[in-house]
Amino acid sequence: MTTTNPADRPPIDGAALLDALRDALTRYVILPSPHAADAVTLWIAASHAQPAWPHAPRLVIRAPEKRCGKSRLLDVTEATCHAPFITVNSSPAAVYRSITDDPPTLLVDEADTIFGPKAEGNEDLRGLLNAGHQRNRPAKRYDANTGRVESIPTFAMAALAGIGAMPDTIEDRAVIIRMRRRGPGETVAPFRHRRDRPNLRQLAADLSAWLRADLKTLEKAEPPMPVEDRAADTWEPLVVVADHAGGHWPDRARAAVLALTADADDNGQISTRLRLLTDCRTAFGTDAALPTAVLLDRLKADPEAPWGDYGPNGLTAMKLGTILREYDIRSDTIRFQTGQAKGYRRTDFLDPWARYCPTHDTPETDRPAATVLPLTPGVAVPAVPASTTQVRPGTA
Image (cartoon, rainbow, N blue to C red):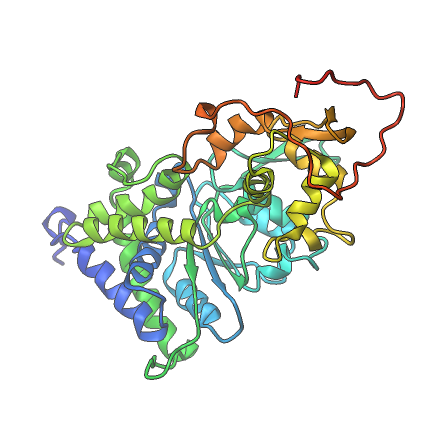
């Protein structure tokens, strides 16, 4: 019987495998752009080499309405990724216990039921999805039977499909695909699980054979990245796979990184905290200081801002103070020309504005210091308790 030496086998054409995977995706799903198709292709391929990655990027498949193809994309992702683990109706304990040093790929459909306003009882699963983006972030559990604290691994790539945005703690660590309904003339092949999945699973096996043969090489790779910081952490496994495949994929990968990260920036991917900080800049205008009540009125006067409906009675002074304290901004008692009131000084916002929401205008630090201006006539200044310490004029 003749055996073939593995060294004599022809090398696997990684670029051709990625091409085949992309063709399969676009056969069954209308993706929002060619860059999105490239990104999903590389994310699926990267799932087959998870032991090589320091970070486990999330794939967020979101849509504004039903019937946008997000569940079909998750079907194809499930059929082609490494060791798919569907978490719908799975207990958190089962999910935690399924994650090993060679983790499965977690797949969550209807993820809005986990993170949405009506979600209850999913704290453990949310914690897992938040923590599992980076290695060495285990969950700690006390085992009463053994009297010991257990470290349970959380590191695993995860794809989440749902309606609307996911929490910023997820999307900040994700490749985001914004699905939309098919337009006139856009058609796809029908996906039949029994007929089509076996061929897709064979493609998954081929991807695994290609990438698993070079895990050490993939682990050591340090590709030049077109983005920095957390975005680079998230996209690096995809770019490493593209570079390993060669051909047109290195260029396609980096073009997808730039297109999809720019798309995230251009589509309102801003936290509530940053939105408030930015809106405070507009609310202040040229005023050097504002009473808290006036600042709140100005924030809630914008019909496109969320502050009028932020809670049962809109944004409150207490909630405003809680959010702004995260940026080391605190209210104080200030003497205005119309009287003394609790309020905020513009100078306390300058450093956070420069760090978190810069503009191309004249830098705040270069503007001449302003004095406390009279408030708009007719605006009542809230009463201040007599025990409140006064601030001398000019200290604002």
